Amino acid sequence: MEMNMKENMAELGGAFMLSWVVFGMGLSTLTGAAALAVAWMAFNGAHLLPVVTWSHMMTGDLSDTEGNWMANGMRLVMQAIGALLAILLATEAGGIETGWAATEMWIPDIADNLWGVLGMIAAGAVWWQVHTRCESEWASAFGLMALGGAMMLTGAHEMGASIASAGDGIADTVVNWICDGLFVGIGALVGVKIDEMISGEAEDASAE
Image (cartoon, rainbow, N blue to C red; front, top):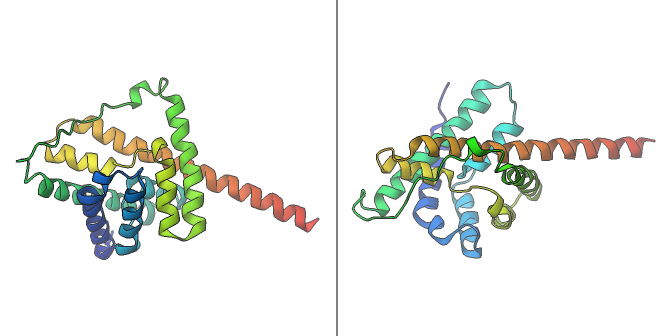
């Protein structure tokens, strides 16, 4: 597989900006949403957040190992590296205590978290329609702000923090990093399929 260095550097730079500046504001705030929109415009074409990358993966060609899975997998890796570099800078390579602690792996208790999983899927379905229809970084960013409570948006940041902490809680963090994005991506796929079904029914009705 030939690496797209421009694409990967955009992911790294954007994730660096998010971890260094934006997450301190909180993406659930107006200021955080505005900063995210600016980051998307500055690093044009970059996903910046794992949930965005997973949504692209799940709505892309699922049989395309290289073009879809490997290319987007590299985006996820570069996001984590960008976050790691930002955390090392912000903490002076661990000289400043951030109070970060790994979030416990939640997937073993998925039955107890069923409504949370359904919320992630629903949020992915709704937000992906906003993201793909509006063609505006501002609409996508404010959509994430509105739905952020149902999605984990800090996956790359937590991965970077875990690596910077010499792998503290890495197993829990990796599972959460994958599952949080995957369920949002599944929601994006569900939203696409529902939209296709509705569009197909509308075309059938107009043809009659």
